[in-house]
Image (cartoon, rainbow, N blue to C red):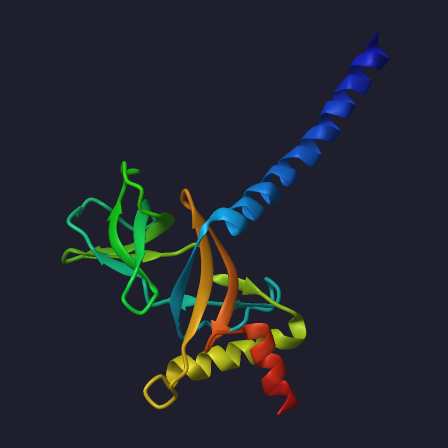
Length: 189
């Protein structure tokens, strides 16, 4: 009887170890397949961090919204409701500390600061992992484009799929070219 219980416990443990990651993968694939795609314009990125792997860190222009709730403080979780602006880029329409009954897409964020009716927030999808041979070149390309925005007519944005508050950064683009391909073209020149 004891061996049967151990075997059943072992099988349950194995199933749980497969179920949890499988559920996470399924949720992400569902968001990528059926979620709404938004383009989030970037600002200059931070330097590469050798301790966390090869990725680029993205800062987004959409990082604030006018907000009347002065009780929100640093690191408080918020719902940021988004829509596309006239150029097709994501913009924050409003934010709330509670989930509102609306059909509008939203992303989860954390409060960075709340001052004079302006709520600044951090978006969770700010890392884009890449092939280690291309990460530094990609970082430099995004940095140069964002730093020279007045003289270089290029646009850099992250394509993020959103569904029911879950947001997944799918790819980063420079002038509508995937950053992977953009860097490959730059490396060939």
